Image (cartoon, rainbow, N blue to C red; front, side, top):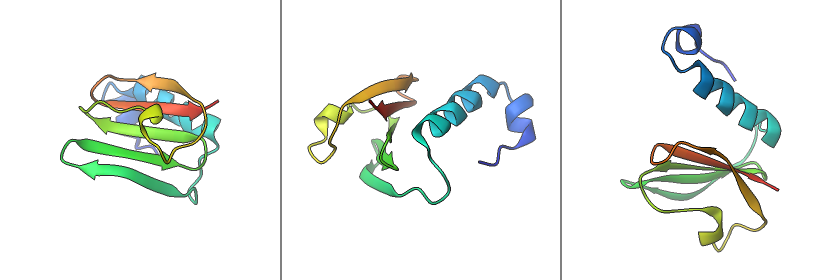
Length: 90
């Protein structure tokens, strides 16, 4: 992905961006990875990117086990509470 220099070095979010880049690498996400949206409303957003990454944004209670259309076993990789969470397929 393209990362804006100022965001990476000057905004104090270097560690957050590094963590998200690592999740992308581990999941094998690329620019053509398919995105399947499960929830998108005023409470938040949930999508699966590729076959191995699930992302939740927002302050609602959700995890992969609550989604009947999401197969497999998932391990939480990033947990920023109500801001966002990422799961990787095990």
